[in-house]
Image: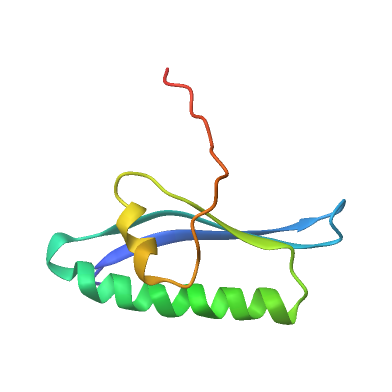
Length: 89
């Protein structure tokens, strides 16, 4: 099996929001296949946003790191002012 890249995609059922919430984490791609992975990831994000709308979901949150930050530039997700703080150990 060939692996060109991967991303972690999770969802949760939020009791207090009474809805679904989608989480996208850590997108990685081999340097030679970065464009291919970006194109497929763009399709996946679009389908998740569409499914979120159809299920009356409460949101999609993408957690970026230095490897995944540029992947979101071509998707339909917009940057927000929500800042996540990480404590270095």
